[in-house]
Image 1 (spheres, rainbow, N blue to C red):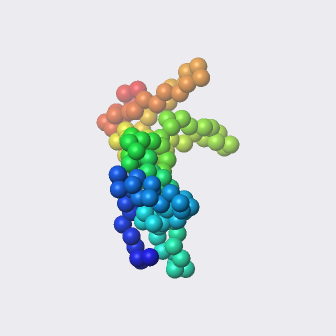
Image 2 (cartoon, rainbow, N blue to C red):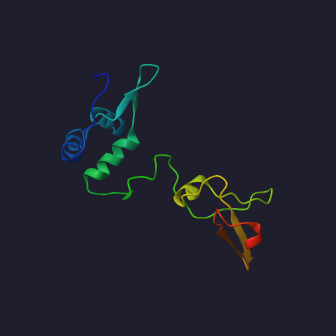
Image 3 (tube, rainbow, N blue to C red):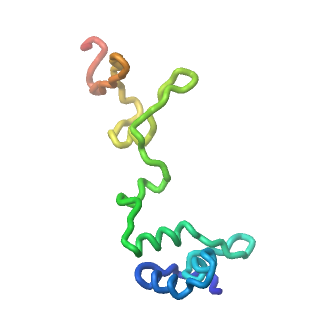
Length: 128
């Protein structure tokens, strides 16, 4: 087995899987190039990559956006109140809004909702 194989994709992958139907899933994935060599020198089969490539070769896309930003979590646009009573708005949301450290907001409480109104940088406390 070569040190690092290039994984097969598309129609050639479908044909290879068909040709190797007598092998186990792990061995089929390995023969199609979906493995890496671990620190111990043993091959590690990448079944997730293999299955993703199979789905794509069959025209099935589970993530039409191609993933978020590589960190693995999608923005849910929901937050929870922590045990200490705080609500934290994550980096994903502040980046999306173009916020910078020091940006200020007015908090308006309503019935079961909270509004954050961004204050302009040139507004002083006297203008409120």
